[in-house]
Amino acid sequence: MVKEKILRQKFFTRPTLRVAHDLLGKFLVRKIGRREIAVMITEVEAYDGPRDKASHASRGMTERNAIMFGAGGYFYVYLCYGMYEMLNIVTGRKNYPAAILFRGAIIKSPLKRGVAAPRGRGVLKFAGNKDIILDGPGKLTKFLKIDRRFNKKPAAKKTDLWFEDRGIKISEKNIKRAPRVGVAYAGPIWSKKRYRFLLTNRPK
DNA sequence: ACGATGATGAAC
DNA sequence: TTCATCATCGTA
Image 1 (tube, rainbow, N blue to C red):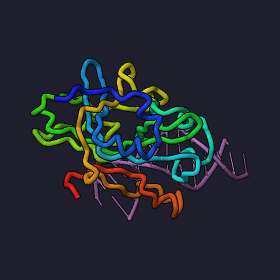
Image 2: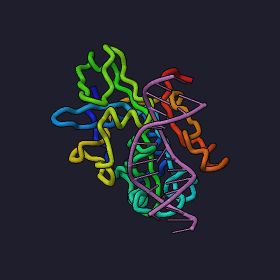
Image 3: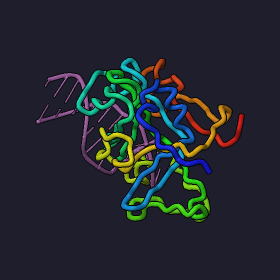
């Protein structure tokens, strides 16, 4: 078994599309109390630069999106539709607004592997030996109890939310690119850009 | 297909 | 201060 390696800021200060690609198969780890829960990232979306009409940063800096203009490695969390917390990681260099939205993750056979999950109200239940599939940005944050308290915090162990490389190698054949979700407002050019990266189970 | 639900940003 | 909009999701 390969020892897990925590992803450092350098990983995130690279170009956004590259970071998005490389995040597939990495783990997002959330510490709640003395319990750690790790989910493998299966789907992300990139919001890249000031000209990206789908990005919150396309109309300049505001109080909400200011963190996107900082250096990579910090979380950008905002509320969507009044009830869903959206988790992003800022990417790229300072003054270049970019971030990656986490849309999907999976926990493989949690009971078999002895991995615990958060309990309590509003939390998805385990389904026996089956994988837990978090298919949607709102479901992901709800499951991991992530909200705007993480906004502007760095991805690190001390913040109770960080990334790990656990040695899983992803084949290019298992990576699909597709248009981003829910960004029709960005117009024909930017809404069609294939800035959404997904892990597919089957090769090809 | 639609309503829930509240922050955001731009207009007034 | 108002108002339309929104990087969604569960229910129908």
